[in-house]
Image 1 (cartoon, rainbow, N blue to C red):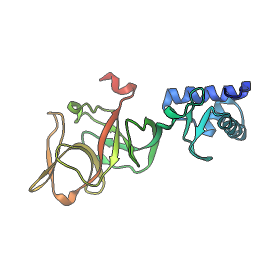
Image 2: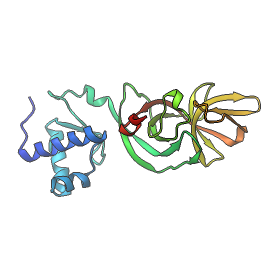
Image 3: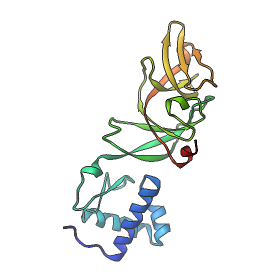
Image 4: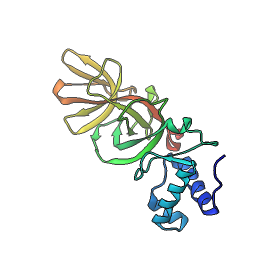
Length: 211
């Protein structure tokens, strides 16, 4: 049986649970301190206490990644969760500039999305809608520098523009095919396309449900 929590410790734990439920990721120390009207040091100390009492598990002392442990300290489910970065936005219509900055992160189930160095990209546009990829979806991607025919890939065009399309290798270049008849298929010279990853899944938020 886990040690009991003080009211303040329970308050912090409840805030962690609610934030993860609402956003899919733990809050920063700054956000927790502001919302709970306590100091950063108090939040940090409470997190350490919650970990010592086996209510949470952190990946490292300074890591924002943490897992809520199910009673009685079951870490099996918690260990299946991992945080992956959202790297800017990427178009599923007209290519846009590939942003390298992190734009938050997502918490995913490692059993569903195994592998190392996964990343997510926010889709903009509807050119892949017939493949079930809609505007505002998050594409979960495995890093790759190669592709085989019919795979849906993240392709960097002219070293600066990125797009999500279905890949086909042709004698005269690389075909990037949309999954929407309103958008044209294009064939690029080999030197103009760099494969950045393979799309292995989609996470849809409330905005995507409107479609």
